[in-house]
Length: 258
Length: 258
Image (cartoon, rainbow over all chains, first blue to last red; front, side, top):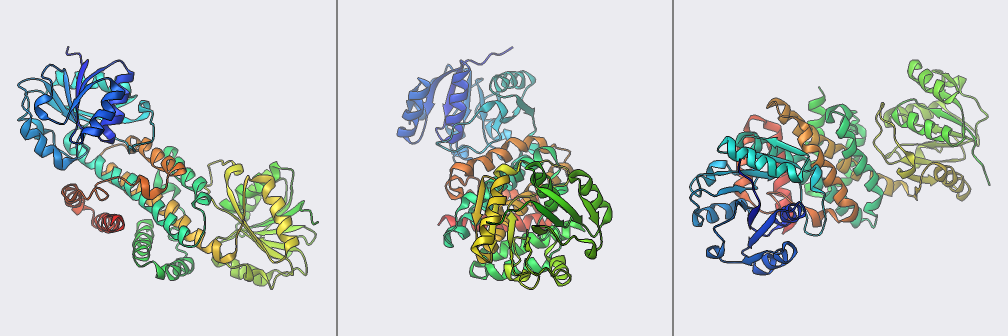
């Protein structure tokens, strides 16, 4: 059974940073950080007590695991430059196929933490789902063990399934946050505070922890309260794009109820 | 100074129910429940130890406050039938103007709890914002006192401001929940569990408690990762309306970043 102790992180963005900190906390040895932006690589390396560089050729060859945590665009570039004969290499992307790594090593996989990471917000990794995939059962076991050391929610997920989960993550996280952003913008333009909405935002999220979202849908569209919908659309005529979004989503909620 | 003790609830839906229970808990006396659906009125009346009826003429005349908690559509109907010379009357609607009540009594106002209420989910009223408005300072004070007895977040808000807040509440609550619903639907159709998204949903909501939503926006559209967006749109071609929503929201996130 492979045991993973010495780890190299290729990338120094938000995912790389939070992951490196969580692994270090559990006694794993982050031996090196590679980052295109040397100041970011340095900053992270200081926290994890690692060497760092912005040169691919400086990456040490003796790690047990290489974690690629760069944008999907950069991933294609980086994998061309990295060749290990048999070292285990994984990426942390939601969308990229596992096959992207097959020319970089005989042993490869995915280590995808399903969460939204911000630079200055600490996060408890324990509850973060980690999606694992690997090219062999042995590699899967090794990644599974590593993931379980930092999270209570480890899932074995195929590349196809991971892509579906990633699309859904965009809806529940990126798009929900955009809804918050629209509200914040409208309130700000009317000198009203976003604070008043915060208990509602939290309760809306908490509700679907124990209920199916469809079963707790509320609001004018769900009630088919066309009178209120018309008033809202009328108010939003000063906010062209927000009006388009309001109309489309209300129409869909009405349709879905049928 | 008016003190409110004896309260009549006109309506027995989710808002009426949660409000009645919170007021009862604080020692207020809900003397009567009027409900169009007698079974619901009865159910609530049993919990608050009140009389109940589905007939407008049974509503007692000696309460300190009449709370109308019915749909905006029903509100217009009900106010026509209710006349009190000077009894304080309020409604709990986010959209209806305070003026809607002026023919029902000399003393009128708004008591709007800004939250999403579901039938079978208990809720702590303490953190729920309540928006107050009244036709006189004396009525405003009386409603303010009542609101403060059940909530720590009481706001004095004009009808115009309340309408804006209500539109924003639709975005952050109803539309976010619809995003959750879309994800649940897509996952279900692929035999994947919605559970994997729950930590992400909670963290996305928690993030905006202490950050401006615009500043914590993440995702492919925000990164202008057109490659991933194309993959997602391609995947969503089996989900016509969801694809339209994905495209519109992604386009807007890209535009807003400029």
